[in-house]
Image 1 (spheres, rainbow, N blue to C red):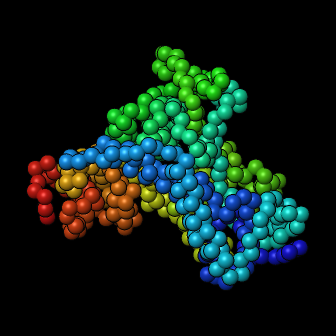
Image 2: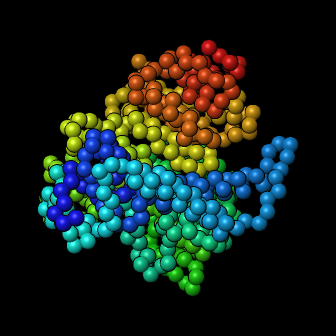
Image 3: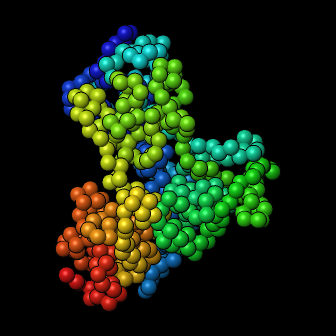
Length: 467
């Protein structure tokens, strides 16, 4: 392997890395993939799949006990160790089928376990050996971010990684962070039976989303017993015995919080420190993310980057698209770019939050005069039929043309419903195009059509089947 030369050297073994390797294999290129840790990256090991599995088990346990009209399920004792074991089995199965087995099937791809470091724009060193590449793809992902809180280094805090591996349910949990990660874990452990408190720095949870969505979700979470404090400025953290203690200033008041477990859910940091990128001239952003152009090229023409390592949006789907496009642009000069405005995002709370495109405020800031259609889920026949009326849908359209520019949903199954809006935005469809499309009745996805109809009619006064 000494002085081996590859068409594409990929540093990382997660979503963006595999997307790049698969595309390079399609082109018949010689590829080296270098991974320092566990193959599969964040999503399959400590992110999307395991967290959604544990969220689902919490929902079954919690909502089964609350029941539905006409019946109520009786739940047995909760055993977190059993939940974690089932999650571990899932992770191993999917890591094997979706990563290890896939890698074995990629012709001309060599996997190297080790830590890579650039020694020049054309060469990396790994395990004491040098590897040369015509092109490089940096896909090293990200790690949990620890905020600069006074005293935090003396506290036994946890991140989402450790929260997935707890074997005993804590009696109390304090979560710092009110975006996707913090909200998902807060509700997960509340459903398991923990006493949960959440602190968020901004004035509302999900601060970049639509206010109707964040306010609605907060109400539902608080109804389930989660205590949420927004506008919280954390001043200090400390530990007293097994208790974790956090002091915060909320408005004009100083408050004191303590819990058995402290979860830091305050974002993620790109993994770039050990690569020696700046030494070879690769520009980084202030937060350490690799700076790329719209084709995923770094400041060094033959070095490309994709996934969490380039910063927001840190989504598995975005990483896959970026990795694939980076490989195409590097190896065959495809010149492809990504329209990030059409990439949907979701928060897997219950009810879920899903969004694509612009919010009302973002559209207005961009000079688009908007008209919005807002419909509560309580007006949707399928939601009423199955007792899942918590939520709202907001459709954002350009006022004159009625072209859809954004869609934001709070609903059970929102992450599945959102894709109709993705197509609408991608292909510049209008509210009228959605209305003119026949939907199955009754379905949750009819919510998008109801929001479109609300531009013209009072949805509370229409029959079940309209237009």
